[in-house]
Amino acid sequence: MRKISRIEIANLILDRLVYEKSRLKGGYFETKPDIGHFYIDNLLPEELAVACFESFPQMEEMRCLKSIREYKYISAQMNRHNPLLEEVLYAFQDKRIIDLIGEICDIESLYADESLYAGGLSLMAKNNFLNPHLDNSHDSERERWRVLNLLYYVTPNWKKENGGHLELWPNGPKKEPILIESSFNRLVIMATHQTSWHSVNKVEVDEYRRCISNYYFSDNPLKETDKFHVTKYRGRPDETLKNLVLDCDSGLRMFVRQVFKKGIRKNPHVYKKHN
Image (cartoon, rainbow, N blue to C red; front, top):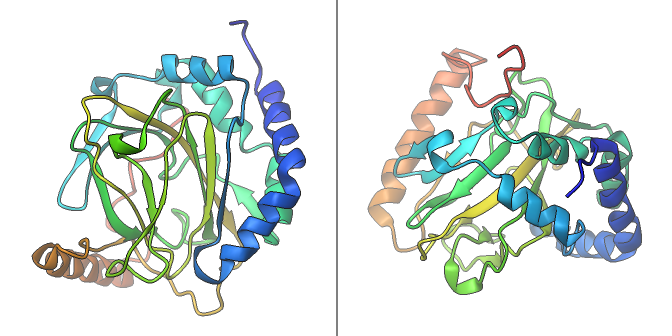
């Protein structure tokens, strides 16, 4: 396909959001008391979405995160990958899109994150997973609250039985989750706050699920009761021992952050543009 600019991509996203605005706003406010969310299918022209899929880096070119918390591949160093992916990722940071999503979700002072702190690209292969967790409450400098997670899925023909789907746990990780399929060309937007537990179930097939992600931040938390916290992980309902280990792990990391406000070391998952 022809080379397409960030502005052109942003225009396409904006058109879809404007067209679906009423439905998206209704969906978000219906779910807001628990974990506010909505999704929109066929976000971009199919040819462009397929191009994103075909441009994705191989897992050998990405950083592997493997522990009892998670198993996946990530990258935020966008200048190492196909330029199309950077254009698409930053199209979601167009001010018009940020303002419209802020209007849909009734969030003021909404900001994108140019550094891609914890955002960027993610790939999940067979047996990869992400345990139930709460996202870190703030940006890397602890100046703004993390309030929205934007997930754009670009793997064609990704089926329910493949696994690798987003799960929301509005009643906590001991109850049943809401499953949102990682369908091709689907954008999911979900709230992140003190009780927005979410996860990704295990990939069951020998294929790769690909996702382009952004976080939006705000001067204020989504809930008045929100407090600073590090990323907290939990076990699934049948993982009692893992839950105890992860609870201790979260407590230890939280203690460190109380002593060292910005942590002992910088999170390496940012876009270092000087590289």
